[in-house]
Image 1 (cartoon, rainbow, N blue to C red):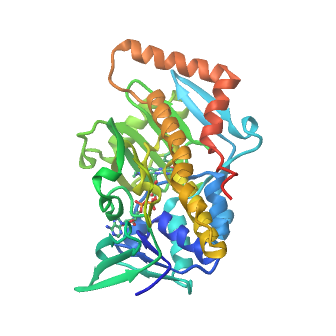
Image 2: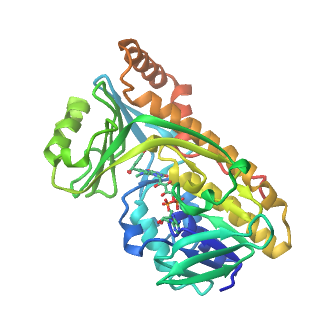
Image 3: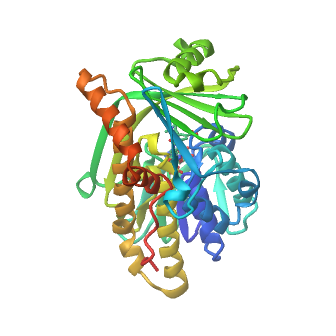
Length: 395
Ligand code: RFL
Ligand code: PHB
């Protein structure tokens, strides 16, 4: 097989990148280890910044998102029995975020990719191995039904998530990895019940953080901070609802509509950045290059800026023979990555119980009280939450 861009991973990054390139006639092959149903079944992100929503539109897959997605102007922070709204739109000159599940977004991308004449996608491709990317002869080999296949390409995009093959193929002396693991995880529950509130509620409570989110006006997504050794099997639906009720301010807890879970899972929390994001003809994109704890809803939205910069650079290469943007990809993408890593780390610290001494709890409450009493404090949350801009000089 031969193509222009070889893409490892058919998650949101790989699929959306392929579509952005295909709008300019650039051909790609996507190698995905799992089946389509498996990738679509993962319940993950729910909040899209304007930058990600715009990319979906540019990729020609924004129609259902614009019809069904819910635009939000604000979020609510709950602590110490208080409920405080941050009016993000008012504080950021009208910026909003969109509630549209990663499951839905992935389905829209697959529908487009599978009928796109410029894109070939191979599901259940095993043992994917990038090679030759440092020597100027990039290629991908993989196994499909017992046969080894090689894809020759000009460039490789590693869009294969944190556990993928692309970062692992880089010689260790060429890459620096920065990582922090948090001493807790998030237990998530999805249910066909109306959300407790029309906006998201992020709750700080001495029993632990809780988040009330949603997928639609009839489907809710809730999260609880839990210890790292907790098991999903130990959390019956009743236990989950009971604990959530204890962490929410009483006025909100009394509004909670409970029901059977459709999905329940525990995710660990991690901050991780690999530097650089380019190794010869191989680029890392999205979770393959960086991970943030979900508190700021930044993971997929950071993948978005990577996709934007890399697609812009590849289009300039194929249409104008320019390599300068490819040369600037890593540095430009990493600047926004670190800004979001910082915000996600800070917001996680602010909102979770770290099991420290009582003074830590009092200081967290004082910080929340200060932030909410100050326009500057609210603005710093709002402008990070709606998403920092993409670098306009990258053209
Ligand atoms: P993905 O989604 O992990 O996709 C990678 C794809 O690569 C495939 N793959 C391979 N294919 C071939 N060969 C290999 N060796 C391979 N290894 C892996 C995988 O099967 C998969 O299909 O990475 P991508 O595309 O970069 O997308 C990143 C996002 O999925 C991620 O950042 C977000 O889900 C993070 N996230 C959130 N992000 C937001 O922007 N807003 C949110 O509200 C938000 N909430 C969340 C989240 C992540 C969560 N979890 C579970 C980590 C909430 C949670 C609970
Ligand atoms: C979600 O709806 O899954 C979600 C929303 C906001 C976050 C994290 C996850 O910060």
